[in-house]
Image 1: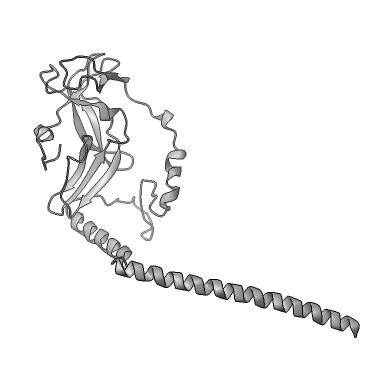
Image 2: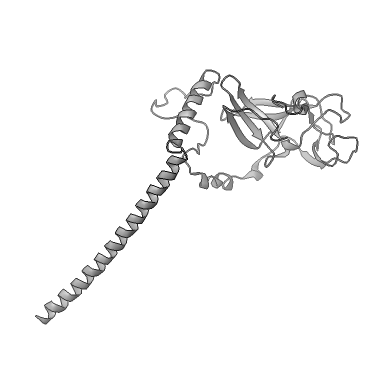
Length: 257
């Protein structure tokens, strides 16, 4: 009988501990519910209740508006299963933003091979309009018609807003559909490659540019890119110069530079 009393006492103790834990969980649950109600009220008051759904709807409408003017749909090869999506690219759409650093971490930028040698030089010629700044120069003789490298930077998309090309001196337009109000730009203000140092030929003493911005489609992925391509022979040691376009130098211009 004594053993039964001891076992009952132990079981009662365990039961009390479980009840205490349950009460603690119930209190925590009540706190979380109260916090959830508060956050829901704040979201509703801020008009963000359906922000996600609205963003998805706006993206779908934008996709439909562009469908008539862009031929971006991948054509799968014969025999490709109809129920599978076809793509030539690595799609990071479903990866959370905080893990996108892996895209750069697993890349090997040292493996990038330029078709020719280029060098970045600080311009010391006082007659040059970019004196004191940097320019891109040929480190070997470059033939005419050579694609040197892609213009790289952060992609920015403007839709249903005024397209401001003056927000950065390094913006290059990649795509535009004025009727749909969509502009896709490359901005090399904060990041990029050697191409961001290509200067305009005006005032440099050159009669004409020896290179140009050249839009093309990647032969492997089909992705649209913008490259710098020579339109005249460039001797070693000469600066690579393009024509930014007259609108680049206009104050508060709305045209693409």
